[in-house]
Amino acid sequence: MSTLQVSERESEKNPNTLRREGKLPAVLYGPERDSVSLTINKKKMKELLNEITRSTRVELELDGDVHEVFLRDIQYDHLTDEPIHIDFYEVPDDHPVEMEIPVVTVGTPEGVSSGGILDQLMETITVYGEAKDIPEILRLDVEELEIGDSIHVSDLDLGDLEILTPEDRTVLSILAPRKEIEIDLTEPTIGEELLGEEEELEAEEELEEGELEEELEEGELEEGAAGEEGEEPEPEEESEGEE
Image (cartoon, rainbow, N blue to C red; front, side):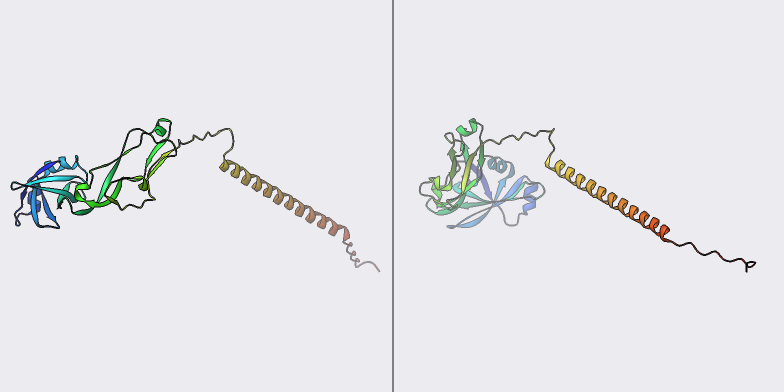
């Protein structure tokens, strides 16, 4: 179990002043104890965060006493992503708690060795039980899984812990390898075929319009010629000298 040295923080001490000094403000609380404001070395805390999970119990050494706690909450600076405040939660071993446990896989599945793909759908499982029974990590042995196999929440056995995550949820699956689709670049694509059909329709429409215009022009010419043939010659005016 990891151990962290902490000290009680004076109430009048400004948290921003602590951070400038390389320290972090924190609080220790629990169902059977009073809350205590703490000060932690920031560097030590960041090193610890790289080694543990949220379901890991940590030992806090405070004024010679050891307190077994969970990390209840971590506040981060939204610009620098640096931790700025820590909440520690202390409970007795037999006290029930609700906790999210990280899920990790162990081994290489047979299906992956055959070309399949490991698809992990869930990163954590939510459980409820006594503090002493909460595991740091849930490790799943996946070596014997073939392509098409899956692990569901209902397949998990966590002893006395109650699993709160729905049983029908899939934790992970071994998927078949993706098939490569070969495209013949010499054949027209669907888009090219549609474009070709549109061009053919446009050409047919233009041809029909042209034929219609020609027919109209021929009709106008025929009507003009017929009109000229049907006209009677105008009578010639008699000259004034004729009797």
